[in-house]
Image 1 (spheres, rainbow, N blue to C red):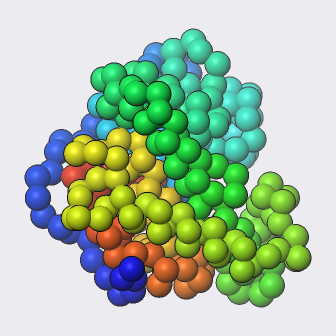
Image 2 (image 1 turned 30 degrees about the horizontal axis):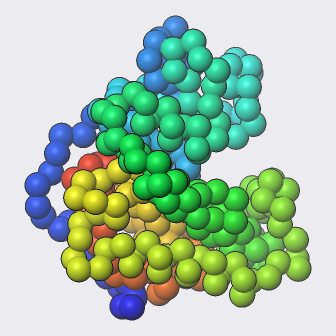
Length: 276
């Protein structure tokens, strides 16, 4: 299967562009007083989990108010009731901080069958692939482990800044005995399985229109592609370096079809630039 290589830099593909539902960035007081969907997300880095959550609601046409996360904001911490982002609120329902719960909510708030298939077997296959992208030991998890490893073995010269790496190492169960070959193999296997769904020149991964699988595939590919400032202006320089480490490790393993699919999703459905 053809690798992306330098083609990862190419973005516009042409074709029809739909109007994207805007995301409004607000302070915590405004979000707490509002109804509908509110989200706490990173304002420093395009975390795939947070960007996927934004993309799900955008694809569904559901307005979202986003609060930028700050560890120093005691009011925000008390409201979130979680120590990680994204956290999603809907009306008076309990907050959701798990990718599967957030996806299910987004599916419920939009047209039936648009984000997740109605058919049980089809839905089970789709959710299984979503887990291979966003779940523990999935694509995003393992890419994050490689970034942590790069930092821990280079005193922060590569990967995350040391304080961030130590914090993430505890969350992701990192140890110096990490089996790098296994981690890379799982990433490559997941990428290949997704790319195979684009055989025959199909635009989308799960049918003739985009759904949750397309959103997750596109957003979780971001760490494996170059991120110029024009694509994500608010990305902090040191964290841009961390994402660059993942690309150095695995960029050549990304099939060209997936790079083109990511470009298509952002161009038509998710919107450039990536807003933090």
